[in-house]
Amino acid sequence: MFRIGYRTIKTAIGTAAAISLAQFLGLHNFPSAGIITILCIKVTKKKSLQASWNRFLACLIAMVFSTIFFEGIAYHPVIIGLMLLFFIPTVVAVKAQEGIVTSSVIILHIYSAKQVTLPLLLNETSLIMIGIGIALIMNVYMPSMEKKLYEYQEEIEKHFSSILKEIVRFLTKNVCDWDGKEITETSRLIAEAKSLAFRDVENHFLRHEDLFYQYFEMREKQFEIIERILPLVTSLPATGIHCQRIADFIEELSENVHPHNTAHVYLKKLDEMMKEFKEMELPKTREEFEVRAALIQLTKELRDYLLLKQSFKGLKKRKFNQVTVSPF
Image (cartoon, rainbow, N blue to C red):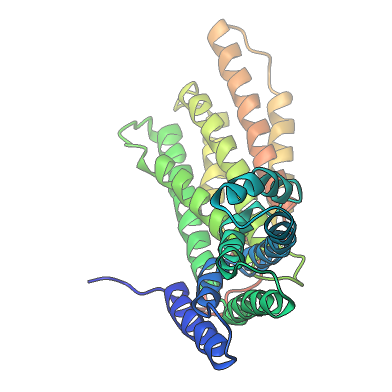
């Protein structure tokens, strides 16, 4: 079985529409309008608009160069090669290189006509405008990515919770039989989610907020902190009231991983705990000193983790399924 995506459907419909319109208007080389439509339909609205502008600009430059070289020198294959030596660098200079292939079709149309006339230039311009116009119309609709983005959000938060619970298990029971699969899986999910969120931003011309992208970027930075925490945890003994306090705190975090922002509550608790640790009796042995240093470093990392969350203003409530959300 094969899957037909929405972009494929839009390309098929748009190509047929462009060719039909160009043919109805009696334009020469009318199939070229369909080719332009195919090339201008992109995965996002912004990319489609950018591709359309690049191709339109490159085609205008191609008509100017064709007039100068063909009419000024000769209609000969060697002249095509000579013209491309100047035409391609010019298009690249104006950052319209994406339109080189499309404009080459226009150049060959003019070469085949053996004469540059106003009707010919109007014909080529009409083909370009029809192809680009149909592509932009087809790209007006873009399916919402919000549901998928929320799914990524939930999966990443589940993985965060699992990793934190494993840290708690090690601190309280000194159990080290975790295979760590959530680490690689979380890294993959964050990368995919950021890519999708960026596409979502490019589908909205007037929306300046990119909350999902900011959210996944925040989670990526938090994940880097979690990766730094893991080796610190292994240097702490499973006994001791201070380790139990840390374990209880991390367990509370693991049960409250979500997109909303109440990190200030946990920052207050953590600051109180850090103050208690600093007021503890000084370590008497090298081992106690190393444990105390790891403990302080761990609390600092947890503070940075919470500050990242506090800096994020939060996602809006999901509309698809009612989900229970909590502070972090």
